[in-house]
Image (cartoon, rainbow, N blue to C red; front, side, top):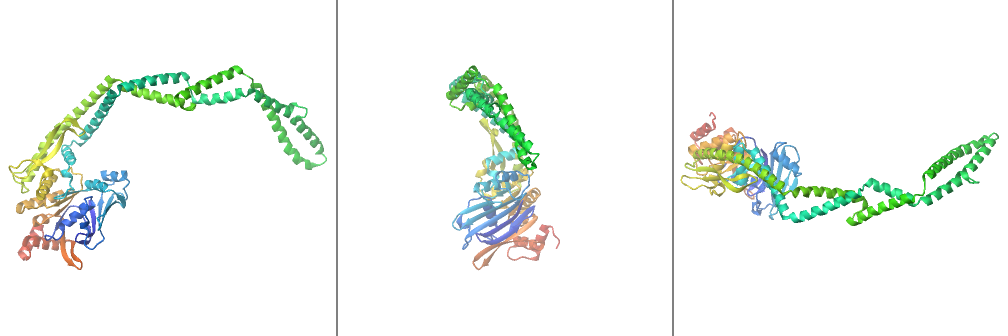
Length: 553
């Protein structure tokens, strides 16, 4: 619901801070006081196009802010989160700044955003019924969704859309195959050759690493043997072998230790060195026993390396990527192999089409029944709203091949007067008629509507008496399920409201200024009496106003 609306320097409003409540709120005041300016301000903050002329004369900018309470798990909350515009849970704060130069900026929860984003949010929050275009009921998509909701067919409509998308995807694959059959066949032949050739190579990354290490060892075997033998000679087998020299030194120092204990530190350092040299000798002898010249094995390794390098050069990849290349070729071959099965594709397409048609047929049946019921109920509601003889029709027009939304498109049509032709709802000329038609539809479908705030402007144009009382009751009833606001000149409508605001225009230093005040019980009696009796208000008029409000005087 709309919690608050703050307006600064907008048309003839200098400063307004309004806090709203749930239920039905009536906005009243004398003609020209600026009641519609509030609706204009709300429409602007919800994404309507701006005009520099809306900035109050002498001001640099106009600014409008609206705070809405939204469900933390609502569709809008998810939308805000998906677009990185969420802030405080359960709150949506919209702000619009209009410069005197004509430049406009929009913000959602303090973050700059595009006007289209604001419109997307506004369509989920508020419906303004009257001469404004910010009205979901005029959009074909909203009419279809409302009819599906009225029919209880929204889940089925979602299934139909999914079935349509599935059918179209398979159809696209089949058509692509037909266009590219020769190219795909050639590609498959090439891939089959590649997979056979790469498969015969039986290459693996682990083998490649081991093979390179083995080749280096075999290719340098003679040099390795020479180096090991030299090391053994120097360490343990030569006349001046290091191990023999160290052993001799240790023997002499151990003997000298009896004469001077200060040699112990040197001995403790040399003893580990003797052990390390001995271990190195053991390791080198073991390595030498395993190291042999093997020309045959070297030749095998070189031939295998050449085969791998040759294959890598042919496919212009590094040798280590040959396994990856084989995987890619095999995957693509499996993919186009499936696509080249024309009969299977055609069968899948038929099955997908039959599934769509079956679901769409069920949806059509539900829509047709619901369209008749909705048409009858709205037509009946119109008779009580000064549109006697008028007719409403939820028309269904068949689509040749169907579409994502089924086998037909929905269009709301209306004849506002007896004998008049049925015309699309979007082409109804009179703002008052359109507003009352919206009220009729909303009253019939109020339990289904997803938009939480309904605003009615000119709903009472051209009516009075009994019809006005009916309009008031309808708005009050809607207020039980939605937050409803209505600009009205009729006391019968205002008296039915849960809350009432009075818009007043007054003279100020810098020109006319419009202000708004909440009316308590006594003030409501006075305002409704004014609406009943004009400039001069009698006690009889006040009693009548109190009676209309259901109050005791």
